[in-house]
Amino acid sequence: MRQKGAAIKSTLQSIVNLYGEESLKRVKERLPAAMLAQIEPRVLPVAWYPIEVSAAIHEAIRDTLGEGKWQASHALGVEAARIDFTGVYRVLLRSIQYDTMWDRAQRAWTNYNSQGDTQWIDRERGHAVGVITRVSGFNLGVWEAVAGRLEGLLQMSGAKGAIIEVKESSATGCRLDAMWLE
Image: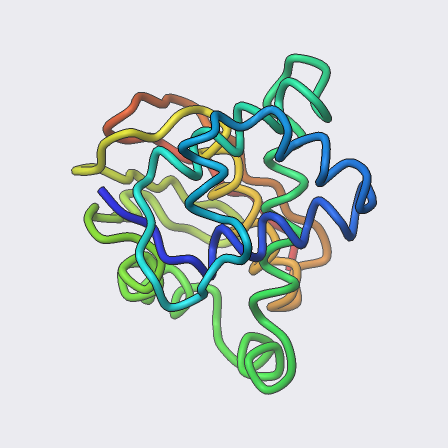
């Protein structure tokens, strides 16, 4: 399983945006040397990186910024969505219906990840349940970041309030519960 550098790069920039440069330095210091070597001196947005790199980053986030909890990864995911979707992309988000966003989730997923399937099994106004399967190597921090990114997309698409919760997760898949106000 591999993840595009764009996802890793925006996660690292999110740390700087929300916590500052010193916090990014602390997170990087917590990374195993083999993982740090893959992202130093810089992350290439179009390159593919082993999912273990992202998982290690989220473990370091939990340990340094999250006080042992994964919620910091969720907030960083929201910020990463803001970083990834700027300019004309943000304008396009405002112009699409929520159902279209859920319909396009698989295409967006494959732009960030080398494998996996997304399916929104329950969709109604203001609520959707999603299932992601056929992945490997994810930890709860990565799933929280995914939920945060989707939450950020909902907010940028015009939702007055949004929350996406990870309801079930494993190294190979998860179930997400999305709620928003239109």
